[in-house]
Image (tube, rainbow, N blue to C red; front, top):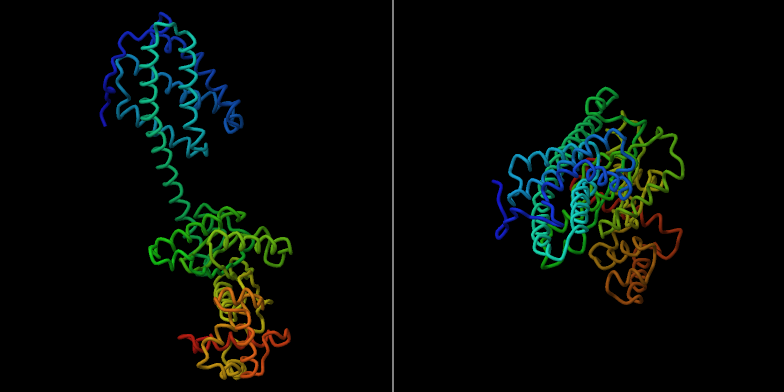
Length: 425
């Protein structure tokens, strides 16, 4: 885009307080840039924490470029052209690379503009109203162009950096899943291999919007997935390596200790993470966790995935599950006479879809009859009647704590046997 002059602007000979504005700003440039840098340091904490050489170097040059650029605009009202804007974009990209927040970069230009305008306005007389109006029009036009260029340069660098980081994480994830990750492999991606990982398998239930008649289910599902990924990054110590789809997947969370060193506090943190993910997803989230050394990731991932499948198949409520929580169901899910026997316990319910649905819903809601009725949109007495029918048909009472583990196991075995790949366990 070529440099342009705003319509109706003819600033030749703009004077305020009897002095030409361009000359005033250029002659005061050294003093003004020092004042702006000091205000940045005092008003924005991020600048106060920068090394002194960066403040007196790159930051001061950025401020000087802004003031000098606006002073040049005052010569004929012509806005910065492509070359000047490209310089601003490049400068912003370097600030992004250094980790300076975007809002701090943009704020520097606005703070500098405000200080210059305040200086000029303080010198104004009654006859300077027209000049001040022109000045404000020009400064707004100038800031619009400058902040657009600065933001574009910053975002381009951030996208590039994020792309590189994502590629590095994917390379490391693939190496871990294939059992060929070591310190050298991680170093090649620019990442550090931790002592261990917590392999998390997630099952994400559909968000209500995914079933709403007037909503694109694909868009709703992708929005849910984006929120889950953001929450994972926010609450994970270190970089989480993920392979997630809209219905779930695998996340490798780095551990500061090897798997044997995990403490109850660590498990509490992981359980809280699942709660955060569920809140972000806006739908139930089942999670299974298996701690593993980096070299054991290929064996740990299928175990975690199967535990999640078992937790949902056995009508467990949303939560974080470990192997010890589902040991009986996990063992019974292996092919053999015990699995077949457990699955047959629910054969009397075949053809009674309402009874099977009530049983799984009741168990998933922690044996809460009212919540089950609410979920099924029936009266609580209807739930009680159906539970009694289940007892009459199977001899197993879902309201009796001693029978609940058997019912969980029976549901697991029945669900797994009915799955298309049941014969491949």
